[in-house]
Amino acid sequence: MKRFCLLLSALILGGAVCRAQFTDSTTGLLQMPTAEMQESGTFMITNNYLNKHALPTSGWGYDTFAYGFSMTFWSRLEVGYVCTIFDGKRKPNPSDRDKIMFNQDRHFYGRVQIFKEGEFGWKWMPAVVAGLSDPTTGSSSGGYVDMNVEGSGNGYFNRLYLVASKHFATPWGEVGAHAGWQYNRRSDYPLNGPAVGVEWKPRWLCDRWLLDDLNLIAEYDSRTFNIGFVASIWENRFEAMFELQNMKWINFGLRYKLRLK
Image 1 (tube, rainbow, N blue to C red):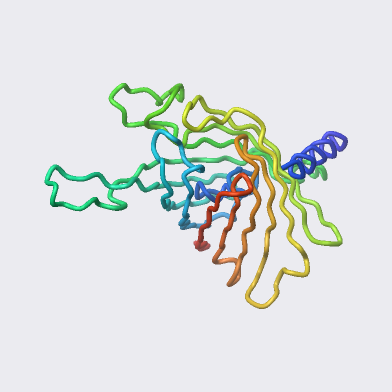
Image 2 (cartoon, rainbow, N blue to C red):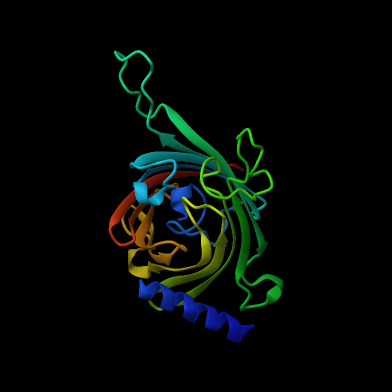
């Protein structure tokens, strides 16, 4: 197991050099999920600006906004609800102006942590999470309930994934290594392949001034190579995200976290 984890970490680091799931309002890196979990009772509100390349082509040909809510239970289960804004459509009356941010796509997600890091006293045990996003649709055909919808249309953000995460203490700060597999059968937002990423918290930038943590991130999310950061302030209640998707397209967001005891 030790040899496997070392190999896994090397692959992750190598993949990051060759090129948060924050953009889906869930726990993760930038576009990639991780096996990390929030503390039990954590409620999150996330707001994002997303460029059109971060979105399914059948729904959006333009930049837009998204917002989401999530809750973590028992430090093992996270469930959430995400809304992504469509441009409004002109009414039949030509004197009416277009309505901006009038309609929105809605989807649910869930993720379960199967193993925690170091569980059962096994030092090299990585955390492992299985997740599901946008599993159903309101289409009249009744498809997607069985997660077997292909092509485009409703169910824009569908995916299944399995991911492992491991963290390492270094003299320069904590390093997190993540690897997994994402899958769907979409033609407008295809995900069917490995996802790898690495994050680094420089120790000299933690607990400085207003800054609690700074995560520097590089990832491959099965579609694009992305770099960015997530900065935490005010006792980790607020997180700010900035991303260069595929090294050129900008996404950014802000998250509020509240621990409900």
